[in-house]
Length: 325
Image (cartoon, rainbow, N blue to C red):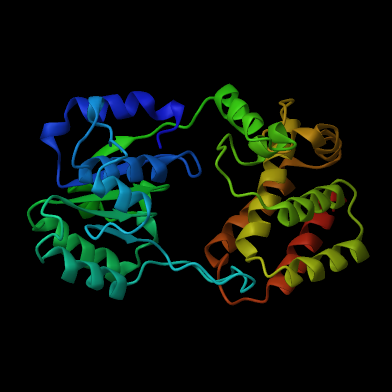
């Protein structure tokens, strides 16, 4: 499917349908529908009786196979997701073996005799070896093969990969569009969740994480050492990566920084009074130093460091900041 806020981009793509590149790179904010757009494009490329506007018919044999997840000429490269309950502390990657497996297939004759399509998402998940393996294919692509790459962070891709793709920016919806979408889906507390997710409405529901995050913000508004230690232990039990905690704390500090400048919060609007109170009693220089500490730890967000110890240390640093020591 195409989300309403990407309808204009689809019309732009369809207008030049007969002038297809061998590789597209769809860029934009995470959780805004880029992968859905790429899948729709893949189905249209494989469709045997396309409808008006180059849209897939939805009824031919190829569309039926595609919608069943069984099209023999459609290949997908994505990180292998952890099993349910296995935790998410490992950095998800697309590895070279997965790339090699697909490369072997696309140099063979297509099963249905038409195009073959390879979807890679998110492309920044390719590790170094996998990225170089894909680059070799993009440099000398086999005939009748189209690559569709999706990225949330184009700056993490090899410049040589980007240079071999036709790039299209898929914009995020406006706040009103995103809020209408969430409300139509029956999402509770849609406005608050949309603010936390930076206006991107296609986030995965995570009620347990939402409650952990709300508990953290309540603690940051009125920190107590023993409660912080308890929180670090509970966060560790959830098997969340350190990157998640850093993100939650970083967004709170950004709201505090905005409050110090007399501006409204971006990420935690329900805690506007609390962030303003914290801003009034703290120092901008210490806030800058604490944010720098988070930035230093960010590259280790999926490292095998002790998450509990790191969360305890960060919360202790925050307590000193909050006490303006």
